Length: 516
Image (cartoon, rainbow, N blue to C red; front, top):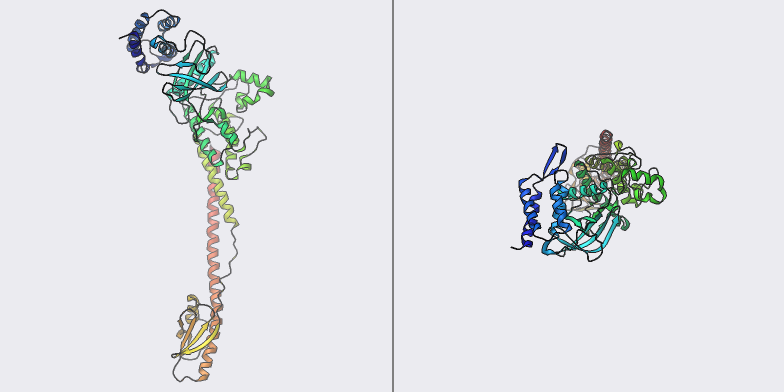
């Protein structure tokens, strides 16, 4: 077994060794420690033996010194430094020499314990870091964020916090870090998926209004997850929100890194407001003053600005800004949500995120109720005229013992019940009462006649039937009108009750909202 094979076996054990870390608080130490773990000590000794077999280099000397100084204070960072350095020694080649400075450019390769990445082009920059697209050893496209080692201790600590936060926590709206390592003596880096676009790209293209709530909800879910873990982003802006191709699922990046400390931020705003203000347009008031304390509500303030901007394309100012309702009336209820998230005092902002979700749904329901109330109130309350039904006798015939009366309209069943059986004042020939009328076919009334009936009797029957038709017309119209009036009154009462219920529901929603 050659030296490289043995060293490779030890490198492959790194993930198992990494699981041996234990959190320790007390004795002046509050950190994840491993330096006294038996399995780690055994692994360390084997690594040192393998390094002794190689020609002494500055890199090997550094590894030996790091091992000897491990005492619990920086076990995690020391271990990762060692893991990254020994990974460069496979096959005796150091693709990126860890003792020399590296210049980032196309074609440069950086390696970690288990992968190597070839840089393609720079795709982003800002603050203290640069982002490059790269291809790993399997041909997969990724992105790598580099940060220079000569940054301040505070910036380096935040980069470390971000790296470990994203590695150890899995959430669909939080940036996943796939790998990390060092490049030469001047860079540290982490590897992440290569995303297709940022929220800034989406805003420039124009977001469909129906898609805004999906994106906004995803941002809040990511913040909610982070806030529950005690992490405050402090730099929420469209450039830090990423998307896969054709996806509306936002991924929040740059966790744990503030491009400027609170002190520097306040100084820059005070002294160079005109030319640097664009960098801080999403900063909450507490970030804009010296000594201000950032809170989870600081991220909520920025999220509110992004919500408004996704509709309007503009960043809202404190007193003069374009409202969502002016752009998308359907979503005007979000203006009230924005106002409550955009309060100048952090304690007055709507928070936590669960409350924002609840309030957003309540405001949507309230607007829906108000629209329904308006619709119900606008409904006509006048009584509609009954259908025009006014039949007349147009012909009289005699067939097979029946006197037939042809009408100019089909016989309505309700109308026939009135003319034949209703109680109304009328004149009739004995034996030829209204109850003897019959309905034949579509538009024919029939009155059975006795044999050898006198002409005068027939004349009277015809006269009276015609009178009954006129009377039935009036009775039918009045009856239908009364029924329609009652139906209209019932509908109006039902409408008023619906309005009253919706108004009461909105009152309760307003009351509950005031308790948030």
